[in-house]
Amino acid sequence: METAGRAVADHLQHHFPAGHVLLLAGSGANGGDALVAARHLLALEREVTVLAQPSKHPLSQLNKRRLSAVGVEAQTLSAANLRRVLTGAQMVGGVVVDGLLGTGFVPPLRPELSELVEIINQSGLKVLSIDLPSGLDASNAQRPEAAVRAAQTVTFGGLKPALIYGPAAHAAGEVSVADLRVPPEWVLREAVALRLTDAEIAAKLPVRFADAHKGTAGRIWMVGGHPGTVGAPALAGLGALRVGAGLVSIYSGADVPLITPELMVHRVEMDDQLSALENEVKPDALAVGMGLGPNAAQVARTVLSWTIPTVVDADALQPELAGHGHDQVIWTPHPGEAARLLGVTTPEITAGPLSAARQLQSKFGGVVVLKGGPSTLATGNGLFVSRGGHPGMASAGMGDTLSGILAGLLGQGLSAEDAALCGVRLHSKAGELAGAKHGYGLTATDVSGEVGAAWLALVRGA
Ligand SMILES: NC(=O)C1=CN([C@@H]2O[C@H](COP(=O)(O)OP(=O)(O)OC[C@H]3O[C@@H](n4cnc5c(N)ncnc54)[C@H](O)[C@@H]3O)[C@@H](O)[C@H]2O)[C@@H](O)CC1
Image (cartoon, rainbow, N blue to C red):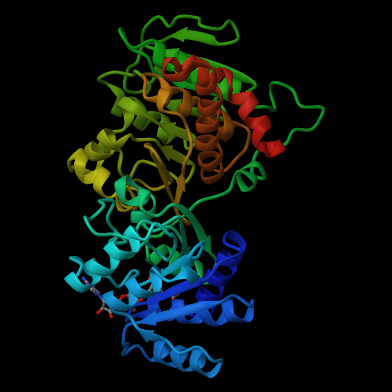
């Protein structure tokens, strides 16, 4: 609680360096954090007013006494008191700290709390919420009728679903994660997600020596394509080339258009055993499933038996592959494919992407990239979310490009986790750059064309 409250005070001091601070403390630990923050703000010579509900929480009681010891008496938090303070002259240009409710909130909101939330929202003042805006259910992406509208939220340990997805996340404003130095097992257990910065992503990207050649930059196979869906493996191949793969071959059951002459395109019989490829020297990484058609699960099972780093995408995302993966597999379902893999409905996936990603990872192993805005990644080390991209990316072929990017990074030696974290961000960053040029008309080919620029932008911190 001490670390949490201090983090709130530091964040407030940074983002709202001037003005009176009204801290609202609820009856639980979230309120305790607000009381601690008040004491630290006082030490930073800020003027504070504290309104608090009575609390049975021992640490909150202790922090109320500590606050009193440094000269600040918490007043009773009632609607009348709140209105009086908010309309006082001292609050002009001031800021409200919302410590009413955090993860202990059990919906629905009781009427007396709803009234407080409404008064806060009507004040027009900037609000900093502690852990999550009061009224939001941490595990739910829906936005309830009564929830504090925050400009900033300082959350602890990791991101909760309500701060990531759907309309709920819009109530949270700008979200920062404060490091409470909790053990990684806590983050895993609580199913909260981490979000890496672009600088952290850039640090994971592969670095080449000057004597690199095409044989050391990754030999990649794309296994996909069927009559009617031959563009898919070609787009994936282009994605792999654009992320720096040395040699990219496409193996397809139908004639694939040569969209760029650097791709080596082979038409093969897509039998279950992939006999045509049996005696070939295997690549450093491959992606399977893009436009692969009806026989995809069997083909995927064969390539998975080779135990080389593999991206499993699109038609190859079939439930019968559970138990056939390995650590170096990246599974890339969109919500519809995730629903097929777990035997549930698509709305069940979109209602809880964090838990869906976690279930997929425990069922299929390796790394799961549950695509969406934002995308959710589940690895053996926990959950990650990746924001970014452009609304113009809502078009066919974007997933194929991502598979190519991921396979290209696997082939350059990244682990499945690092390839997934880097690849998803490179793809969304390239989408942002391409979107700035093409708007909603951007295509998967346009996105591929910006992957190199996205890489440089991440490395240069642009
Ligand atoms: N779990 C941890 O390890 C940490 C928790 N911290 C803080 O503690 C919070 C969780 O603390 P608590 O578990 O005490 O829970 P909260 O403080 O979020 O809420 C519990 C209080 O809210 C009331 N309440 C619950 N549902 C309500 C409803 N529908 N209408 C009105 N009132 C309702 C309960 O009566 C209880 O008094 C986190 O959000 C965070 O702010 C931090 O201190 C840091 C560490």
